[in-house]
Length: 331
Image 1 (cartoon, rainbow, N blue to C red):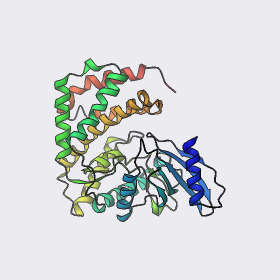
Image 2: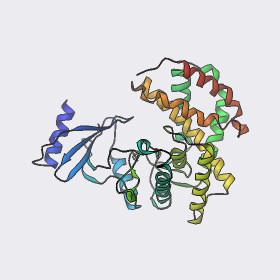
Image 3: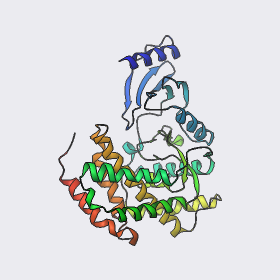
Image 4: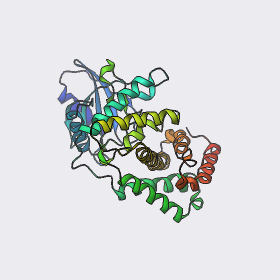
C-alpha cells in the first residue's frame, strides 16, 4: 500500500488535475507491474518496477537504441529511476498471441520478421552485456535445477557427462554465430498488434537485451513457447529470413549452417525457458506457465531424430513428458 501511494503521488505530479484510476494492464513474469490510466491525452501505461528487484535503467537505454533504429517501442513520457516509476505510451492490449490465427499469421509474422531484420541490421548493441559462455551455461542450468531436479525429481536421470557434452555443443554453436543486438524475448507475448497495422509490431519487454547470436531472437519468434507452427513452415521462414539478411550484407553462412545455428540455439533457449517456467512456480508461486513446458520441450524432442548429437536426450525427454502429463494440475 505504501508503494502504491508513492506511485499515485508521483503520477499526480506528472499529470496535475487528472482524475486517475489505475487498472491492471498485464501480468508479468517479473516483479514489474503495469497499469493503464486514462488521461486527457489518451490512454497511458504506468510501469511500477520496485528498485530492490528491478532496475529501470536498462529499459531506458534499450528503448533509446530501438527507437533510434526505427522500431515501434513505447515512448517514455516521464520517469523516476530512483523510485522505479515510468509513464509510457500505450501500445494497446492485443498481443500477437491473442491475434494469431491461420488468417492473420502471414501478415503478422511478415511484420515481425521485417522488424527483427531492422533490429539486427540497425540497432546499436555496443556496450550491452555480452551473451557469453558463462551466461549461456547459467541459463541452461535452470533446466537441470528447477525442472529436472526440483519439479520432476528426476535429477538422477541425467548424468554429468551427458549434460556437459550437451552444454559444450550448445555453447560452441552460440558463440560461433555472427553477433547483433538480441531482444531475448522476441515472441508473441511481447509483440503487440497495433492499429493502423502499418505500425506493427509494437515491441515491449526489451530491457534484458544483450549482444549475442543472430539466431536467438528468430528462435524466440518462430519456435515460440506459447504457440506452435509446423516445422516445415518454420524452416521456410528461417531460410527466407536468412536470405534477406544476406542480401543486406549480413554474414549469415549458407542455408545448412544457418539452419543448424537456429535449431541448436533453440535447444539452448528451450532448456532455459522450461527451467524458468518451473522456477516461476517453485520460487515465485506462479503456476501459470507450467502448461507451456510440454510444448517447449517438444521443440527439443523433435530434433533428436534429425541431429545425432541430441539422440541421447530422446529417452529423457519422453520420460519428462510422461511425468509432466501425469502430475496434478495446479491453478
